[in-house]
Structure formats: C-alpha cells, structure tokens
Image (tube, rainbow, N blue to C red; front, side):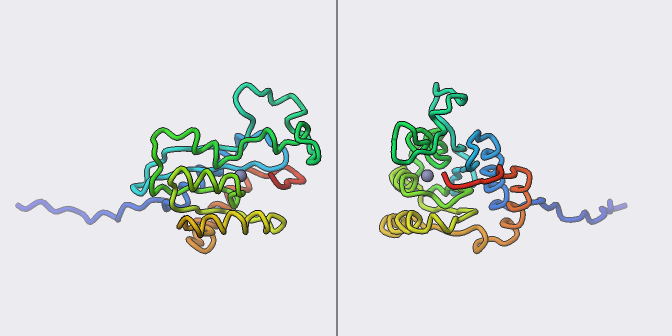
Length: 185
Ligand SMILES: [Zn+2]
C-alpha cells in the first residue's frame, strides 16, 4: 500500500528582510542613552548576513553621566554634544565583523547626516535604507544626498521600498518610544 501524505501548509516567515533589518536597527536604537534622539543602524551583505550593528552613543571610556558630553551649546565645541556623540551609522561601520563592506546595505533609523554619509561611502556600502527624515535636517540631508549621488550609493526610504516593513518598523518604534522632546542628533 502506497503511503499517503497530507499536504502541509506552506511554511511562511512572519516578517520580510527589510522588516527584520530595520527592526534590528530599531532594537539597537533602544540601547542609546541619548535623550535627544535614539538612532540605530544595521549593515547587511548582499546575501542577507548582518555584519554590523550600532546606535548613537559616546566613545568608549567617556562616562555617560558626565553632563558635558550631552550639553547643547553649539557655539562652544567643548560644550556641544556634536563633538562627542558617535552616530549610529559610524558605530555600525566601526563595529563591523568583516571588512570591506563592498556592496553592503545599511539600514538606518534616520537619514544619514553628511559625516555618516562620508563614512558610508568610504566603507564601500552601496545602498542606504532609512526610516525617518526630519524636515529641519533638509539642508544637511541634501548634502548627504549630493555625495551619495556622486558616489553611486542608492538611498531609499523604507516607506517607498516596502510599505509592509515600514508599518512594522513604525509599530516597533512605539516600543522604542522616543523620549519627549525628541529632537535632532
Ligand atoms: Zn550621522
């Protein structure tokens, strides 16, 4: 007698790749102690391997409870957080387990600033997928975009790339819950 098998339902993943990678970037952002903005980034190879994860924070050895590092005086570099905080994208590159990052994609919770754009390009990353874009960062974002365009780095919004992943990421953002008064980085 021939064995009969019941047809099994097709196994399915709960989330797609874009959701997973932006999800990892968002989870990393939850580790950030930056009261102004929690950002995360996740670097992925063309064959879907995660090779680097980072969030915005102080360099090693700089104590989080020293208020100088978090001060907001942009006219005084010594008292400006911008002198101290390492952005998520750069931390993800510096934390990479393999180099070079030729043809990799970086998922970033925020549109990369010009400094991060420089590192992304120089590290060999070829594609950026970002979650949020702040309107008051428009001039800086235009500078990043100019460099991305010149160096052939594709830069796409997750919303335009994959609506389902965008919705998933927004739901996850509720968990990460930006602090009240969440501003720029
Ligand atoms: Zn940056």
